[in-house]
Amino acid sequence: MHTDHNIKKQALADAWATLHAHANSGEALRKDAYRLAFADPEFLMRNETRGVRLQLEMAKPDLTQQALGIDHTIVVFGSARFKDQATADALQQGAQASGDVAAQAIAERLQRNARYYEAARSFAYTVAQYSQAQAPDNRLFICTGGGPGIMEAANRGASEAGAPTVGLNIALPHEQSANPYVSPELNFKFHYFALRKMHFMMRAKALLAFPGGFGTLDELFEVITLVQCKKAKAVPIVLFGTDYWKRLINLDVLLEEGTISAEDVELITYVDTPEDAWNAIKRFYNLT
Image (cartoon, rainbow, N blue to C red):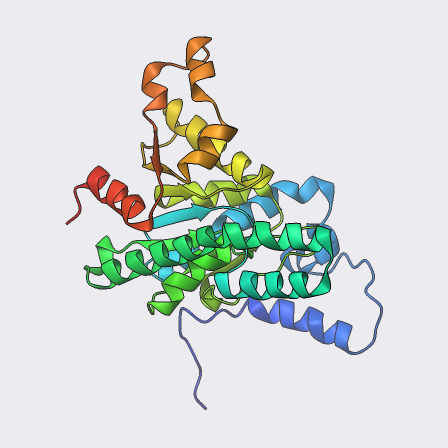
């Protein structure tokens, strides 16, 4: 009789399978001191084991990306509400036909902002094409929050170029789901925003922020603060859409009031085309 002595065999997974089998038999889940601790969901969800959950959210995406050779990423942020050009055009046509003035205003805005979706898609396609010609250790992978809008656009562009693409999704009350262009093996879901943002930075070699709302601003200023305070390595911080960002954030006021230094302003680069965004990153690292 053959005995499997493969050192890599994950025999401990049997504990989890046993728990599922118990549940599938129709027996109610009840407290059981005899359960293995790591196969006891009630225990893992206690307030006292929050530290364990934080560690697991840290380790799982990290180990998976290590195994798949995802060492360097370009993180793309932006609004989850923007649509691709074809969808925006169709929505505008429908709104015009309806005669609904409010719907027309929304559709016109979506059509105007569809250029950002297409720019993110084009940028990611360019990065993916470049990286596929590089040695594995030098490849850059597109990483997003995994949701719709600009995130979808960037994952889509990289996917259309045939490259793996990372999504760091977040569990929300309205249940945001991953966009279909994230590689399934790199599609991660987080409970803790803090751990998710840490993973954005762990492998980031550049940040490209498109116009967005509170979430985009939160992620953007997290990166700026970490780099400013030397808690993270310097990376290109590129803002796409000069008019949008300069209307939204007046860095001159911060500089005039002495709340930031002149060198802090230099942390940010403004661009208006996918080519300029990619060139800014290439210049920073002397890529050819």
